[in-house]
Amino acid sequence: MRKVVLDNGVRVVLERMSSLKSVAIGIWINVGTRDESKGQEGLSHFLEHMMFKGTRRRSASKISQEIDNLGGEMNAFTTHESTVFYVKVLDQQIDQAVDLLADLFHHSRFAPPEIEREKQVVLEEIRTVRDDPEDFVQELHAHHVMRSHPLGRSILGNSSTMEGIGRRDILDYVDEHYHPEKLVVSVAGNFNEKTLLPLLNRSFGKWRPSRSKHCSLDSRKPPKLYIGTFVHPKRLEQVHVCLGLPGIPVNDPTRYAAHTLNALFGGGVSSRLFQEVREKRGLAYTIYSQLSSYSDAGTLTIYAATGSKEASELVDVVRREVRKLRNRGPAVQELIRTKNQLKGTLMLGLEGTYGRMNKLAKDEICQGRYVSLKEMLSEIDKISKDQIQTVAQKLLNLDEMTVTALGPVPKTAFSG
Image (cartoon, rainbow, N blue to C red; front, side, top):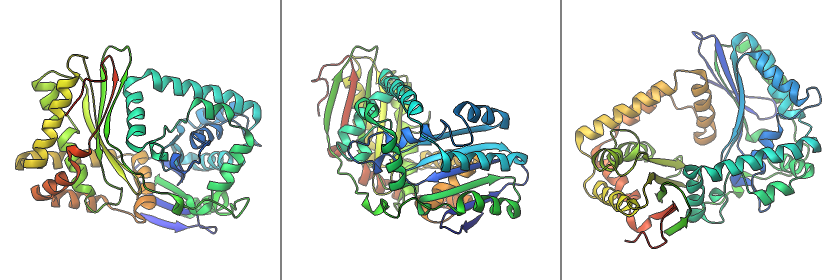
């Protein structure tokens, strides 16, 4: 792995995988939903969409055709803290791929007719989430846990904000947030460094923001997490439930133990929640837990879907499992199995260029350094039963649990 800083401060992280014939290139801006001000909700995500809607040299249809002509994959995504544009192509097409990425990034026109058309696309995307109970209950849950904090908002924004967005709003947002020090270019795969670095420097190293005033990452404030029980009655076939607890920031010293705890608790088919709730009791088809970590906060969320008559029992069973793991910790063999599962998942996820490209960028943005696979595996191996118990005592506190339910269930269904 190698890190290079371009002329203007843009960071480039590279990992050559010479045995492959492909390369993945990611343009990561350390700006996301949490950086939006009131009235800008969803602007980061909308801007991501608009980057594909025409530049000075390419129309929207030509961009689509060129993506297909590359024979690979080009896409983008937005998170609460980052906006990412990426390509995965054959190594012989690096020049064309970088040229296309740079054109979209620097020269998107944000034409008003395209803005109006794309608004309708995003409004449909918002409606799609509302029609998917699993997605919608998690969106509701994040709002209840973090309330008005930006991390509690939907990445897609809301209908009223979307309808009010204009070209000037997009340009001002780019001026405020898109700056070289927030940009990481991540490349993994087969490439010639001697030709790639000058190409990246020409494409991204000469970039200067249109104005010096911009929003610093120091303006981010950690959220306060709220507790309570929130029920949203709706005519559905199932009740969709989220049970939330505080998590950890991405750089927390206990992060390896915390992710192991999460995997052991609800991360797979051998996890405690899956075995107890689905296999032994048949209370749910889908149940899992997930650990979401941000730069200064985190949450642990358990999701399940069940029948209306079983919803109260399911929540009681999950609470008992939380209490049991917090008080007794894991069995030795259970911990060994979970650590092996984590290591296997980690290694398989890094076999391809896309996984490596993602990891390179996240390491740079979140850790400020490259974390080798060897180091990660070593940290997982070191995790002890006592460490899991300590993290469980910290995170699995029922007094800090928030319950959100969506479906055919009365508001009095959950207690205790």
